[in-house]
Length: 140
Image (cartoon, rainbow, N blue to C red; front, side, top):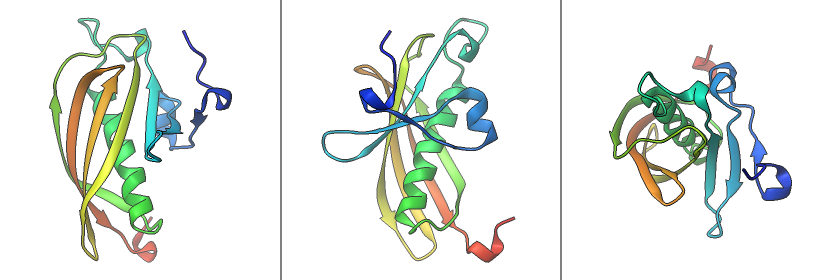
């Protein structure tokens, strides 16, 4: 198993306590310059039938979408208003999940973001999200 370190292009992100609980969440850049967010899975990420739990999959997709939305909003806080996830196939313990997100459309207060999550060349899930830009004074 390849070590995912800064020497291999990956660095750990500080993504908050929830993501730290399933992470660490990692980040690297693709050859085209887009960000890729990763999670190395193990048995602790699996459900009762032995595949990676859908909550882990949606958590990684939501994190990738949230960071890309935050960047698109000039680092203003954003929240997920809606996220639709389509599961394509199961991920397995040991898979490196890699998510990338793309801004599809933006208004002054809303962002529309798409994301894909792969394990190697296998598409695991896709998501579409509506993100709301929150004024910094409105954040807790």
